Image: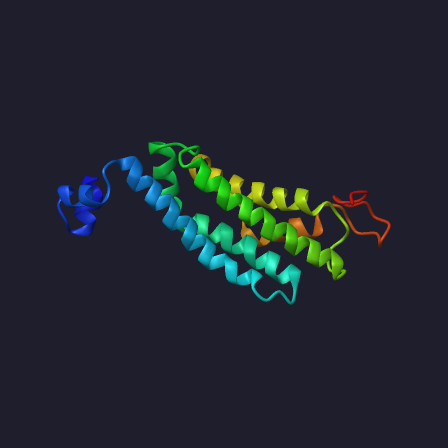
Length: 173
């Protein structure tokens, strides 16, 4: 709280006028950062003309956002842990999963994506991004490259052999 007061140029008492506890301040920061991320990515989903382009932009933006907010993520995880503010996070992740699922469904309908279980793919993408956030704290020297992440999600590891090659989504409907 002292650091925040100093940075804001106000007294510690001034900070406590707005936030009664560090936890209250942390919940405020979580809400604000989630809103900031939502503002940065929601426009991708407004007028979708190319689902693959939207998905790539979404993944890259989410990873870039985590990289840009590294210090806050580290501080938050050390002070409160990842489960602090879980309901706020769950609501956000649920909304994001729905957006991704709908985007993937649209890509399938338009023939841009292979037929797959769109909900499972949406969860996988969300887990990759959350894994990145965890890596920011646990293993910051080994962060993934957003472009490489997108490349693997889109093309997988298997070599293509026409339409008959196996894929991560083969057999799923």
